Every structure is written in structure tokens, then in C-alpha cells.
View 1 (cartoon, chains in turn yellow, cyan):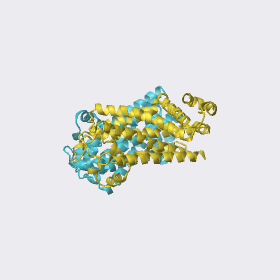
View 2 (cartoon, chains in turn cyan, yellow):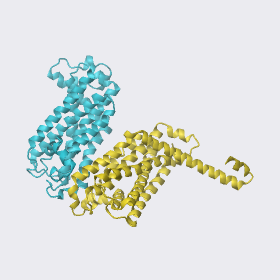
View 3 (spheres, helix red, strand yellow):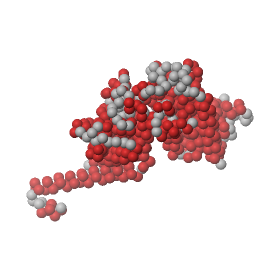
View 4 (cartoon, chains in turn purple, red):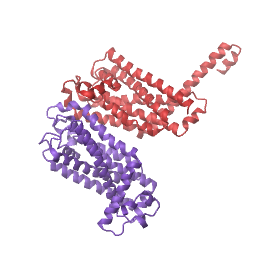
Length: 281
Length: 281
């Protein structure tokens, strides 16, 4: 019931505090509020397809275009797969998941500029619900994206060398990276409060993801990028995403990627939480 | 001048000549004023143009580190470093994305009514378009100079020397004119800045399905056929020949003919689109 009512209409009418707020402050109320916000977020897919479709098409096009353009890179001695789609499809999933996350930053900026977010904050909704709700919505968007990108990749000849474990690793990384994107997007949206945040959202994640083994493995990399990618925490995360699509044994310590992912997600959501607190002050 | 006109008032032939001369001067003055406005707009909004300078350079740096070992692959042209190979793609990438800014400005003029106000003045219709394109051309030339100047200290070698670099700058100007005119057609037809901005994914796809980032000779199957059919491939390769080969008349003519022909076709189409807009606003 709460889920149904926590939408734009109820909130915009200023009735949120009286009719849409869950009774009680327990975890059930938190989850219900978060789900309400998630549903609102997902409704925007239907209401604003022009905002969702590019986010879906971009990883798809990236996966196909990179695989075709850089097809020959797999012939370099030491490259861990002989199929370029195996190398670039997981990268596209990671990029798409991260940008699905920062997409919520854009819509939060819109809500902040229109004043809707102020009304949302005035409602006796748990602050954690304001973070978790969008995150649940982003997870659904990321799952849609992963089904389409992975499905297309497999149709184009990607070979799952790591079995179901490898596929599970890619899904976990996709969902984890979407948390990082969500935290980063929300944190910047709360701090800037207007569209100036959007450039930092995109540029920050873009640089963080490309200054890694995104295009080529560390083993064949040379120059400055090698040193940057070696210490970039996103490198083991991307390696983990690829574990099911490269030669077995290529990723020697998958747990490093998992730890890095958890830490990055925690830091990003902490960044968002601090931003929300600052906004409340 | 007015004295001359008075003194020759009795001579109809002279009067017509003077009137034509004044109209020509007026046309030049109007076009110059429009061009100046367009170039000033570029200078006043660095935030809009900086990405089209920074991102191509970033990708050149990234590619040089990631794909340095790819230059030994079969089908790769003889280059001393990947940076030499990457310059042409960097120029085309910068010019493509930079031209979006100019065309968006034209669409904004239409959208906010400034274009209509210009039409109510005795301004030459074509000077409105040519002025905008002059801004794009100037920016294309500056971009090419900046890309070469920034990459030279990092090991870029232009085998065709200073003269070849100068030809490349001219090629950058003509390419910017061609792409600027192409995007202006979209601006004139839609009058929507969002629609022009929306051409970014299309340009992204065109760029990736060409030889901008990797040689066509290393591609296979449908990717190879797409790159073969993509005119951007030939434009990029004309720039590349001047970077990796000694100066030759053939390479100069190739770049001038390809970029010049592209400019001729798209400017003609843009002028037609302008006429159509004037007939049916």
C-alpha cells in the first residue's frame, strides 16, 4: 500500500507526510519506503524512455563497436582470450552498470531543482530509504541492461570459459558497480544541487573505468597507463568481471576484485550519505 | 564612395557596378560579423569546447599505452609508435565532436527566436549559415594545431614535416566545414538543440566503425565491410598518410580532395536546407 502511494503525485500534492509515509519506523517501513522510491524510479523508464534508452544502447554499441574495431588486439602474444567480444562485452556491462547508477544522480538533480526533493526530505521517511530506494531501482535497470548486453554478446560469439561461476561473477560485479555509480551520482547531486554535477559524475567514472585494464591487460600495457592501472582499484574489479570470459587462471586473485568492489561501494554510498546529511543541514 | 556615386549618377553602367560592389562589400561585412560572433561564442564558452579537445587527447594517450604492442601485428601500417597512428583518429574525433557545438548554437538561435529576428533585418540569408560555419572552420583548424602541438612532446613524429602538418591543419579546417555543414542541416530542419546533441551517438558509431582507431586491414567480416563503406575511414587515412609517410603530392591531393569534396557536398545540402527553412519556417 505504501509502495503504491509513494509516487510523484502523492508527494507533489504535499500529501506525502499524511498518507504516504509508512507507519512505524522498523525495517519493514524502511524497505517499503525504499521500494516506493524504486517503483517511482522505474516508472520513469516508461515516462522518459529517452533518458533510459541511451543508457541501454551505449553499452550495447560499445560492446559491438570495440569488439569489431579492436578485433586484432587478441592476436598480441599474451592476450588472455582469442575473442574480442569476450574481452569487451564484460567491460560494456561494467560501463553500462556504472552509468545506470549515475543516471539516478541526474534524476535527483532534477528533483532537487524542481523542489520535489525538499518535500521528500520533509516527509518522515527514513534517510536510508532515500538512498536505498534509488539503488533498488538502479539494480533493476542494471539487470535489464545485463540481460540484453550479455545476451547480445553471447549471440555474437562470446564464449563462457568460466562456466556459471564466471557469469555469476559478472552479474555480481555489474550490480556492485551500479552501487558505486549510484553513490557517486547521488553524492555529487546532493553537493552541487544543480546540473553542474552531471559533468563531474560522468567524467569521474569515465576516467576511473578507463584508467584500468579496460582496453588491454596489464601484461601487454606499456608506459604511464600501466602504473596508473596497477594501483587503480577498478582494475581488479574489471578483471573479476571478465573472469568467466578469459583463459582459466588469468585472474589469479579474484577475491581482490571482490574486496575492492565492496570497499568502493561502501565509500561511494558513504559519500552519498554524507552529502544527504549536508543537504539536510 | 558616396561622392563617386554622385559624380557618376548619370552613368547607369557605373551606378550598377558601384551598387554591386557595395552589396558585395556589405555581404562580406555581414558574413564577417556573423563569423566573428560565432568565433566569439566559442571563446566565451570554454566549458562547451574543452571536452572536444581533452577527450580525443585522452583517448590518444590511452590507446598509445594500451595498444603499443599492436603495431607489430600483420596489417598494421609501418609506424614507429601507436601515437603516430593515433593522430589522425584524434583529429577526426575532435573535429566531429567539436562541430556538434557549432551546430547546436545554430539550433539554439532558431529555438530562441534569434534566427527569426535576423531574418527581419536586411542581412544576407546565406551569411547567417556561412558565419556559423566559419566559426566551426576556425575551431577545426585550432583543434588540429592543438592536437599536433600537445602530442609532439610525447613522441609524435610527422613524417611529412612542417609542410605536411600545415596541410593537415587545412584538412582540419575543411573537415570541420564538412561536418559543421552536415550537422547544420539537422539544426535547420529540426531547430532543436537537443536533436543536434542527440547526433552524438550516431557520430560515435560512425567513428568506431571506421579505421579511426585501428587499421581496416586488421578487421574482418562485417566490421571490415562497414569500415570499407564508411567515408570517415578514407578521411582518417588521408590524414594518417601525411603523418606516417613522407610528404608526397598524392597524399596532399588525397586529403584536399576528400575533405574538399565532402565540404562541397554538405555545404550545398546545408544551403538547400536553409532555403527550405526560409520558404517553410
